[in-house]
Image (cartoon, rainbow, N blue to C red):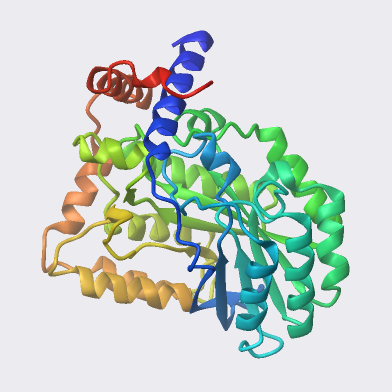
Length: 382
């Protein structure tokens, strides 16, 4: 496929994605934040800790609004009153013990002034400083990692370990651009990493298992390559997200058309095993993080990473254990499981493809959309 053809394909997919997202209902103004906590580990010693995660409402991710993400849906809302959001977050932070691990992030980018107004970010940082967290993590796009932004957080939290989480998705720039619809060039990732390093931040590369147009075999190889590539580039941590089909996304629409299915949880297990064999330490530990492998089915998540009802409880419990304690022995126990056909089915999908590439499948997606929604690609401005 020529560069011109790839550009036209991506343009059509972005417009379709925007059309799908345009119909979403706004988040209610009564929902200012959501809170959860879960175990994780930190540092080279892999010390177990409890992380408090706070999501706060914004107008929505700027890149989401532009159709530049094929699989995420953290919602869009009306314009916010920064003081209302800041007060809500401050009240919740006051309940979290000092010196905790706090994750605080909006629907998209913490450093995006269009999503998080500067006055709101300043107040959020002041509230965080009162809790003196031992670790503070947030998510943003590499394009927003400007020196002044990084310096602002460092000055507000001088004694805190700062952790910036970036949605890399794939280390293959073409897959990132066409399958995930994120037009982030490789150089932007390298620049962000360098700037984060100069300000003494730790970094997390969010990587996907699965994606629009990718077969299970392609997705598996891409995830392995992404882990290796981001690790070699200097990201402190790699975190793999097996994708779900979500309403309000192009990936969700494609799933509803029978053209994509989420990866099996056994694929995620095989990924962990292979990476542990390549990079695990002598003490049965490995350093690959995982997240969002067992979301609840509801209005947003329509289909999640799968396995059958027989093995699912065991697999989810084992993955939750790994999430808090990265022990290779848990993986070895899973590899001996033989009470259903799910492990073999996952292996078969990884061993065989249908002879097409993701470019072929993306072209089919574009054609299916255009055939089912004639004229709708022109309803939104470019």
